[in-house]
Image 1: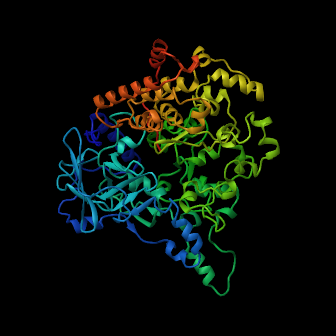
Image 2 (image 1 turned 60 degrees about the vertical axis):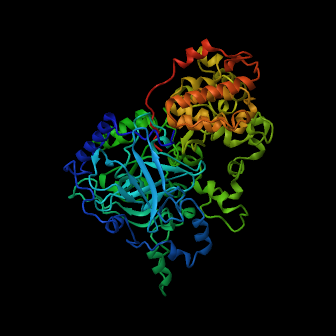
Image 3 (image 1 turned 90 degrees about the vertical axis):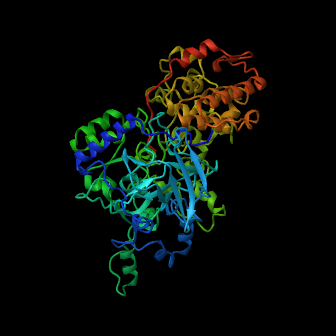
Length: 634
């Protein structure tokens, strides 16, 4: 079975969803009404098509990173080593990580993609008429790859459509660590059979370029047919001027013999903590434009972000009030589904949106904390780490571990067993693990929350978000956590259900939670601190075998990756996007492997005894699983 076998033809439901979005955009004036069968690339030669991509050229006083390099060589080098630089790149063969060496991927419907190289470029060819939002392209089946996004975890590929500078997506992407192609829809947590259209159109020009390029201008042709963009950017990727502002005035200032005023370049570390954080927050946030025009243009560093955008924050009721007060945003806000980006108490649940979490953090709102309090956007010459190690999180070397917190909080008071109630140097004594647990999802993994707060059982009940304690102590109940937090910090013990008193919180959420919760728990079931403290090697494998049969591709992927970290299952032959029968057989094999290696836990809360699962109890909880559609909008 080929890995791309779940690339599916567009269903009627998917066509209806796209139609609703397009109608909403037309109603707002973002798109103009057009004939639904345009001649996409009629009579376009290969050479002509390759020119129909976004224009990359400095404009509006932007000068480009190469100009910065002349005077700021060290800063340029560290930026060049960062993942920000490669957010979007030209698709040069030496930068492409996907395999285009004459490989063919065919799905169960007989649709085939052939990836190949020609004239120094990557191409792909279909054996069917591609669809762009349900609109058939009648004239072309071969497309040159012109741009690509990502290089750290995965890479997606963009090609011209033959209509102005509008791009479309190739329907498969490449996972870097796995060294394999998968359908794009399988890389994101979204309902089965409701993925994006195979050759999705307009996303880069309409959305992605705002944060994946420097000084983007989508150049929407309002008087031309829909899906047409005459796009221009000053530079691909997140370059120097994305954070420091246009460099032209800076050059003029230093070239002048009679300098007056101050240097106009922006240094985020010298701004107030609010404005400094907003430089990062212009991309790392969930926000709504205050006007349609402000959607199209990028935030300028040093300006107040809230001048042009409403930053989503607070509980659902607060956002409903905000949206209701601005009728022009009502339809637009439906595209940005609140429930698929936030927990019920307003904490962010998707990756890359740290600024929204920051705004719920007292360290920022009542203190002086900014993003640069912990993160260093340039690696210093004194930092002896490998540049790629620094680039992973871009943490300042003096802010690693608890040092990020103890720069403000007295270590003599907080970094002690009296406060943590854990042994020194244990995972439970880590500030991060208690106050920034992995409750954010993205990139097929769990990520630390940037809403910095103390764990409470009340938050878990109100938001249905796992508490930090139970993401480490996977074998413990919510009642166990509530009792300890009451004994240690005087937290009130809230009213709990019988299940919350009797069943491990992790097991309960893995069985009854929505797909987002199941993904987080699948990740934590191979997280080393949790496996160790929960004595998980011997029983966590059992729950991962259940998640191998989850209806969501992303949950199955994370579960299989976690399961293969255990010696008992490292050679398991399981493919998360194989056909259902093969997956079921492999999951059964995984269960048999566990039965042959399991140990008695002696813990009734995990619903396993020396004979195996407590099947009746397990079945009762499984019937309670939250089946709501989840589409986490990373």
